[in-house]
Structures are given as structure tokens and as C-alpha cells.
Amino acid sequence: MAAHVIRTLLDHAFPGGEVDVEDRTGGGDHFQVTVVSPAFNGLPLIQQHKLVNAALAAPLADGTIHELRIRTKGTA
Image 1 (tube, one colour):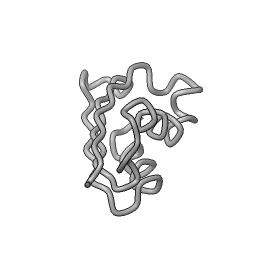
Image 2 (cartoon, one colour):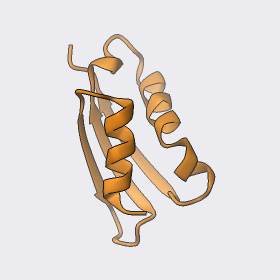
Image 3 (cartoon, one colour):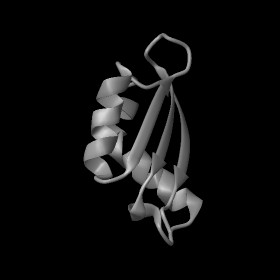
């Protein structure tokens, strides 16, 4: 899976947020994503990560994304 596809999914899930996607190995299945969004304001880290996982549910479920490292931050 290309990083731009993941970026598009996250951009749709977190409009107005800042999204960075890195293909960690160059193989298209190990990614690190960083999302800064007002949607995370006031939420505990685990809930923030659950929202990211939900946004990427399809490629995670079908194995397209083998490994995902998540960094999140609110804007407040």
C-alpha cells in the first residue's frame, strides 16, 4: 500500500489535522503515522490511537498494513 493512500484515509478521518505518513521499510506494509488533530483534544492516548486504528480499519483488517506505529497529539 502506498503511503499516499494512508494519508488520504487519515486526512478524511481528521479534517483540518496534520498528517504525516512514513513507509518505514520501503516495502509498503510497515508504517509510522503522526496525526495532530483537534479531534484528540481532551482524549486519553489510547482513545486517540483507537480513532486512528478505526480510520485505517480496512487495510489493517485485510493485512495490507502489517505494522503500524502511531503518534497522536491534540491541538489544545
